[in-house]
Length: 516
Image (cartoon, rainbow, N blue to C red; front, side, top):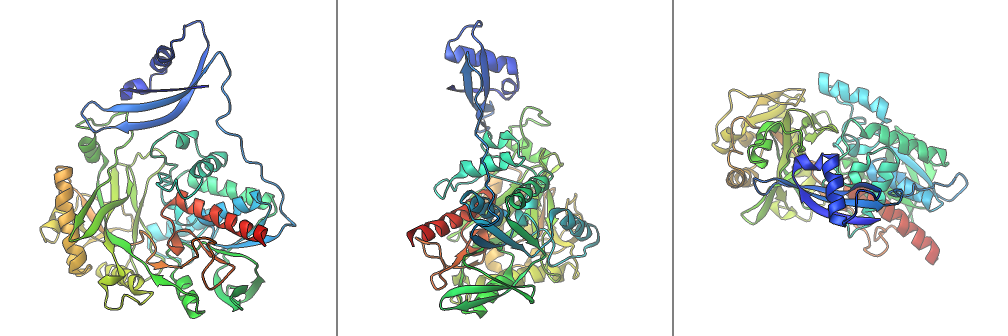
């Protein structure tokens, strides 16, 4: 196998004959020699009007293609030592897979429902604004990751084995494109069946997954968790407990605090979700090219500093929709997702302001940031008439401090209601958002327009609470068998980094067992 690298036009990148001839040319091989090739890496460079594709290939001259990777072989672990995991999101599921690979038996407790049952609750929320606090966009099989659109781009390469996560995703049903594209993406429509395949593998190996099993108490003795209480009635003895509950499970933070297990306030980010048409973003990013079959729907990444704080785009969803992601009945929360083809006519992104415990009168209060997050979500619910409609304002109106009287559209299905964002957010957030939008309009001329609509709030960017853990052992400093994990504990930020964190927690448990 040889690697070949070159740049070409978007049209050439989809022309098999061109690619074959170009690879032969790059390698200096004749037409008589057999050539097989496959994409290795692919990225779009749209910095200039002459857009190009940076292309890398694996080339096989006079030989057969080898497999891209060998599938992982999962052993039977029915009678092995158990590792208990709370939460069946990306961190919990990949912790379970790693446990099996390490010859441990994973036992997962998930407060929500399985994917299929969960979908019915999401339909009720979207169509009728009926929220199930235990089964929604955040809680249930696959966690928030199942309906987060499956963005897999990560900067977590120093944290662990990104390639292993990607290969496992392919093994369980993702396309090999995620191993190739610079910004890999699965799609919300394809994630559920992938999650089901992981569940079936865990169960086939002798692991256990218990749905509608909510952690309600912890029994601590001599600095160890000896039992967990589920649904207020059942108890299970545990040796090792991985806490992978996600950052929307606020009751877990309060439970830990109640049991004198240390938690701390943590910086996070909060703001709004802005929606443009996808055609508008394509035109801005692709120098006027529209409806282009040779280019993917365009995205953007924006960041600025305002009064010493970062304001930036978050979870940008090309060809996506805005979804209702509340977990309690008296709050409004937004998030965005895209299907695998990213072919919806709109694009959306969070635009968020960095929030710090020092912004509040009692920064030492472990719930200072969480309580602020909660207050914004409740204010949004009140402003929306105590419903799951979302407070909205046209973007230019927001910058100019005007109430919007008409809206071009919104993909948010429960509906929108005209609200001035000044009725929801404090000045230190509003001032930074307004200045940031002006900065972004200079970087992407036309970005601030009344054909764009902001929806409030984008508030679940990351955990507002940190669950401490020892940097060497990953155990909680005061509870030796508790392993705080991933986004809910403040140590990850997305599907891949959460999966890595879950696998690393299992590795730390196995290291500890070996050293003793």
